[in-house]
Amino acid sequence: MNEGTWIKVTVYGTGRIMAVNLRHVVRVSENHYDEVYQGKRSTITFSDGTEMSVYESIDEIGAMIR
Image (tube, rainbow, N blue to C red; front, top):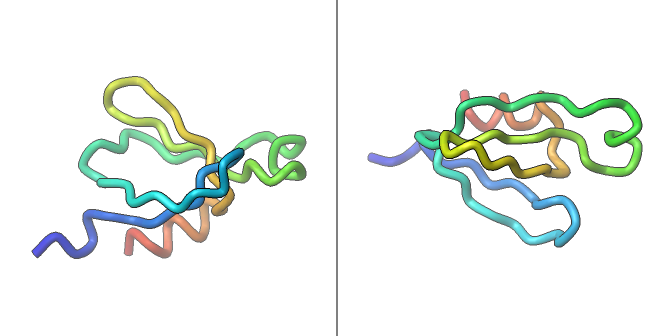
C-alpha cells in the first residue's frame, strides 16, 4: 500500500542510509558541479523548509520515484 511513497537515499556527510517519505518532499534538485564533484550530488527539500544533501544523483532519485 505504501509502495512508491518511500525512497532510500544515502545522507551526505554521514553515509547513513535513510528512508524518505515522498509525501513530505517539495523538491529534488541537482547540486552545483563543485558539490557534485565532492559527492554531494543532489539536495532534497522538505515541506517544512529543511534540506538534506545526498549522494544519489537526480536521475537515480527519479528512477526510485517511478
